Length: 147
Image (tube, rainbow, N blue to C red):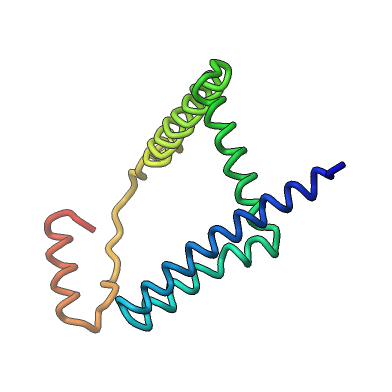
């Protein structure tokens, strides 16, 4: 009786062999028609199926592709999955709206404004009394009531 692992391994070996033979033909054609650079690139692609078979990556990639196909099939035909997609979209919209509201609140001043002191005005020395230009600017600002 055959073991299922041996049959699977034989199938993977046959797939690898067929991909490698096809790649070898492509490599030989690339060397002859397009030169050394194209031939080396084709050879690099030709070696990939053998490397994938020896590292068991070929089975991994096909398993991942199978799982993605199953997921897509469930996504298309299952109404519960669509309700999950809708809930995820609603959650995303709520995140965006709450972020916009938070940025609006940050733009406004949450603390009440303090009333200005109404007291006697004091004349102070110019901040930069050594600089004549700044003194003239301060004098003009005081004359207009800006200080």
